[in-house]
Image (cartoon, rainbow over all chains, first blue to last red; front, side):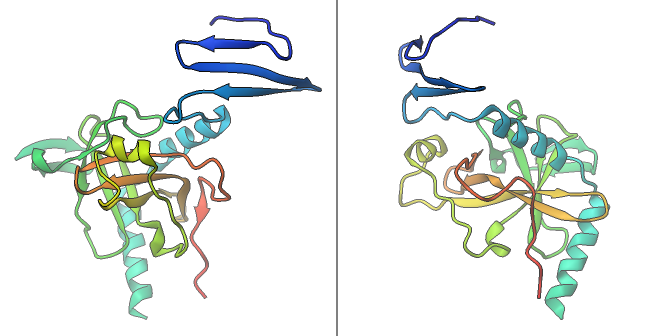
Length: 79
Length: 141
C-alpha cells in the first residue's frame, strides 16, 4: 500500500480523473473532498463491508426453511 | 439444455435464459450468471442459483410486496450498464436473509436492479437512506 502524508488543503490525484483533497483535520476526523466522474460509485468502507457480510449471510439458507416460509405466507393469504 | 449439480440437487436450465450479473453481486464479484428458479409454491419468494458456483444461491423477493412505498430507480449510468433506455422496465428486487428460527429480513439498503429487456441485473447500494441491510418484514395487523 502506498502511504502518503498530507496536510489540510493538500490533495492527491489518482489517474486521470480522481482528485482527493484533505478539506479539514479536526479532532480524530478528517474531511475528504472527492472529485470523481459521476458514474464512479464511492462508498464508505463500512457500508460496503456491511453489504458484503449481508450477502454472505443471505447464502446460508436451506430449502426446508424456504418451503416452510412459503407455506406460512400462503396460509396467511388464505385467511 | 445444460445441467449443474447444486446443493439442492441437479438443476437443468436453458443457457439462453440465464440472468446476467456482469459485475457479480457485492462480495461475490466472480459470480456472473444465475438461473432463476421457478417458485416451488406460489408466494412472494423465489431464488436464483449461481452457475459459476453451485454452492451459492440467493432468495429474492419484490420488496414492494411488503414495503408499498419502496422506490428505487436506476440512474443513467446504471441504465447504460443494464443496457436499457429510460422507456424500458427495470424491476427492483431485494435479497432475503432467512435467519435461524425462520425470521426473515430484506436487504433494502442494497437492492438488485433487473432489466427484463436485457436479462441483466446489478446490485446497488443506497447510502442516503433509512433502509437497512436487515429490514424486518412489517408486522401484519
